Image 1: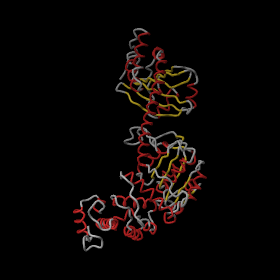
Image 2 (image 1 turned 90 degrees about the vertical axis):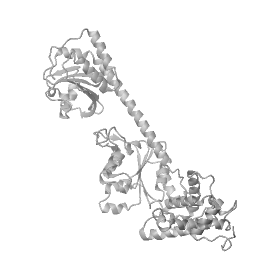
Image 3 (image 1 turned 45 degrees about the vertical axis):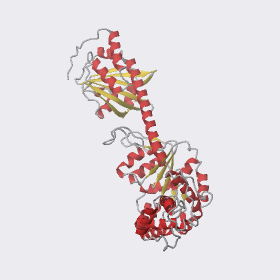
Image 4 (image 1 turned 180 degrees about the horizontal axis):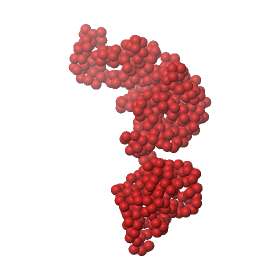
Length: 526
């Protein structure tokens, strides 16, 4: 769209200033008031577009906040470095500059390279200051070269103060909105983390884990990375939590990341965050797990599962304490402690080229080996007591069921390929089947799982169901309840009452499963 240079003049300086200021102050959203301002100024100035930039002196960069045209306005969020030539241009003291072509104005050249400005467009640039400090620029452009005159520059300069104040207010509003979103996001994230938190104490710290806890107390007050090693299910997450809680960072966040559970295409975004528009669907800036852990601890479980590009980024975090969001142009400083854990053979992975050697040695500053449960069977009684109470509360059971005499014997005889996690699952399964009776652990289920684990290398939680049919598990449980009730089926202390079923229903189930009752049974008749 072309303009005449003999556009109308304001009816009066005071009225022009008032009308323009009303539009500049019409919104805290920068793109909204910029569009209103351009719409009004076009009555007096041959402008086709307007831009608003923020000058970041400490970083030596300029950020374009928004651009408005005759069609509409939008946020831009484009950043460019300030060259030495542009810096000298800023320091010469002129408040407003007019150029026949944008390429003739040194500060504009970086914007031209990024495609924000047309090199041949006429430009009018007004510097905005607050308390003597440059905060940004208000830029008008016209499609036709040599469109702006000194009279146009004088007219726009009258709006310098309200434009600077509006820019400062919009920046403050944007920062408040960002902090509000960050707080909301952090609250939602922490609520999810709390829901998933196990709440487990370090059971065995005075016995089987005494040596581990001694190492924890040595390293916890420091900032050194810690590498937790051991088989799956040995409690590495619990030990990581203990290190955090005993450290000076205990009041900061404790962010847990299962590196093996993050899809490969989301790994970088999840760990390091992304900028708005970095990829399809990135509608807003997102802080990654490392940024969330600022001031606290990040626990990288299964660190051996990290993809090569994520390993490179993690190495930079350990070396420089910096991250870079996906789509970002500036590094973000982070202050955190890294605790990593794995059950994999990292030296073998390094030899095979699947794990970076430099990253391995960065993580292996203070390795801690957690013993498997089969080497600390003295903790089984304490662990069972802990899991029974925790799971009973979690499952909403009215009372904690007592252990049957000799209930721990099959647990002590078992080798626990799945370690503490397998024991936890075993306790939960027993509580499900218990239904108010004495708590027992069927040695046949453990033996079957052990045999299957020996054949396939799979832990109990993946094989118990395959080795023991539902009928065999139910039959074993009914027999154990009958033993506890001396064979009595009915009555207030009978098996049916303990199992929570009708006596006739229980007898029907026993007939189907081939469990004898009555006179011919080994137990006393019901």
